[in-house]
Picture (tube, helix red, strand yellow):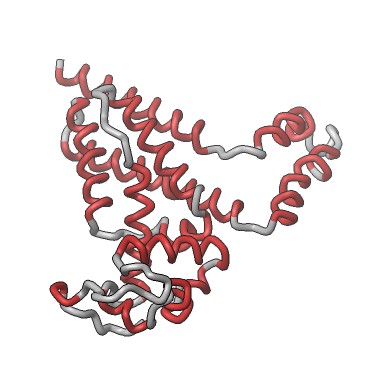
Length: 238
């Protein structure tokens, strides 16, 4: 795509596509997610999207300036899906745990898109709502603004980093995923205690644990540290 966006009042397509669909930002984003899921990053082109939508590719300029603009919309959609149906309960730890797991799950549901989008800052409605909500959870818990921002930063970066890491593994061909997991048994599981005593002692546990994401436990560790910091702040204030 090139920079050639149509003014907002003129965006809506007046005729349905060849498939009988009225174009909208949501339809375009959902179609792009499906294409990326099937074909990877190379699917994010005007030609492929136009063909999938049954529309002239130039019609997409009514909605997005270029493919990067569309990618930001995709990233914001994943953030929005993570928040769908979720409301803070007032229990800051439970709320952050739920938010983190939802972010991670949303990206894992679309691993190919996650590889393209997890590191982007969208500046769009869903992202701004997420930032506002998480900061609100932290400030309501009793953190000062500086600590709230720093904890927010660490919390979100941890969730997105694990999302991207786990998405990269999920995006591998099935055979490659299986081969990577087999290494823990075929290689690490056979190391001798005389040369690798620590690995040998924990090989069975390693093989089992590496089949799952490390994010839930890492999230617990982070929240443990946040809880200690909150208790320390309360003691200083008292």
